Image (cartoon, rainbow, N blue to C red; front, side, top):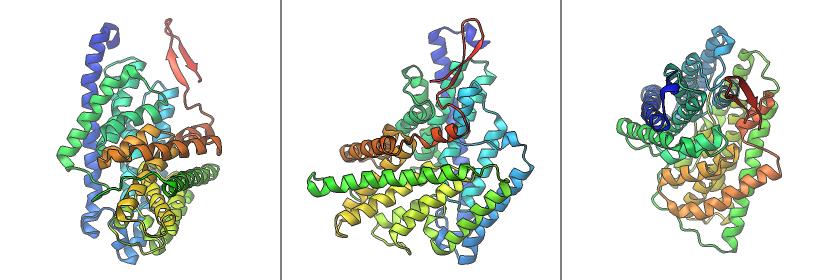
Amino acid sequence: MLQQRLNSSDALLLLSSVGVIVGIACALSMVLLHWLLDLPAHLFMGGDNEGFEDLPLLLRVLFPLVSCFLLILIMFYLPKKWQKVGVPYVIERLNYHKGHLPIMNGVIQFITAGIGLMGGLSIGKEGPAVHIGATFGSRIATRLGLSQSHIEVLIACGVAGAISAAFQTPLAGVLFALEVIFLEYRIAIILPVILSSVFSMAVSHALLGPITLFSFDRIAVLVINSETVVALVVLSVTVALLAGVFYRTQQLLWRVNHWPVAWRFALVGVATALCAAFIPEVLGAGYDSVEKLLAGGTLTNILLLVLLAKVLLTAFSIGLGIPGGMIGPTFVMGGLAGIQVAVWAFSGEASLELISLFALLGMAAMMSTSFQAPLTGLIAIVEMTHSPEILLPAMLVIASSCVITRVAFKQDSIFVERLTSLGLHAKARVRVDHNGDVKSTKE
């Protein structure tokens, strides 16, 4: 095998070089997915792939129904082994199958996520991106005949590259791989992962231009006084409660995952179609709803109603097995929660700068709390907005909401909880000892 001929310097050079290739592959797959999602946007929504609420009522309702129907057809004819997709599946393969990720599962993840996103289902593209990126890393490492430890490095490169390309946040991509997938900080793998993340962002930026999910004219610098401290505490508690609802709803639905896929996906299609008719702001990832509020606009429905509907519909969709991600929607939930808290706390007289600040704090906190990844959420928001002034209040809100979730609600990362519900250990590792025997260790 190749790793038997490598010393440590050669291994670092090889992993760094291959990590760059993995990062570029991740970026190209994300660019392809982005272009795919632009097709219905150009045909029906004036080029805005989040503009579902501007569609005529009939089309708005038909989009999710047709999307779920296509997903049912695909899953009906697919072998069961190819139907497993998503971040929990990546962690499972990493921990119990030496990191070997089948290529067909990655292909199915790409196709099904694209169909769901084009249909306006309340899911994100970042979770599927992680699966696809990890598959690139795993397959290339396997082709080269690398050891399990090297396979893990290239999987981390793929994960970091995927997040970096999707959000154009290279450091957050590195932290996501360590905090969410590996559940620990590994200094030994950091250099190839950084290179993968940087090159992935560079390719994404070159082909798509800058990705701006939210635009801010200005963000308020928080003045610490009794009023703002109370507002930050309220936001922390609100985010923890929403994260609890988001997880508990999925936990209830995991119990019916033995139901036929046709029933489960049909329920998602009907629920999404009903929301499309009455609360269209929740369709898709929902970035445009936050953007509209930050620009001083209003939604067609009450903000609190949109927030609760977004949390429940996303949990309903993911909990019943729709092959999409949760990362993007958690940003939207947190942004809506932050805006709502700012309106409450400052008696509806909050400036747009203050509302923008609380929206960012909510985004960082909701993402961090849902996945128990505090540094990832913090750095992602700073990188996306280039606003280092939010660091101090963001650290306070993120730490508080994560502690409340862990201590009061006994809740871990949603990905870890999902694996636990399947009877798997999120930090098990299959190792090969010095005699060549396979051993499973559980932490």
